[in-house]
Image 1 (spheres, rainbow, N blue to C red):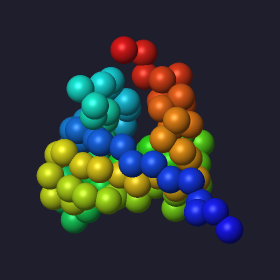
Image 2: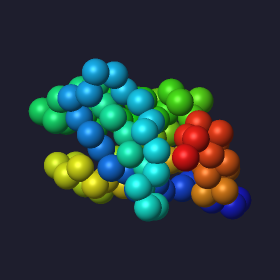
Image 3: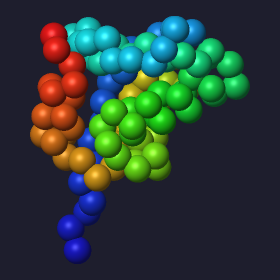
Image 4: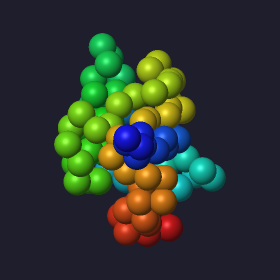
Length: 95
């Protein structure tokens, strides 16, 4: 049986924003504003929840891979290939 598709995405997280939103690309990282504070993992949870919502994936499909306490993070996205992920993001981010 072939492995499930998966992709990783570099993120530049900006917590404490008025609302969660995709801002655009900073090099190879996607800048994401998050309405949650960077306390007790709330911003990380909001990042995973928000990305799953905008990518139209189940909540459990997006997990934090690295950068739990940093603004530079990497998320793992199950069920999407890197090509599919890039295609969806290109439709969502106009930059």
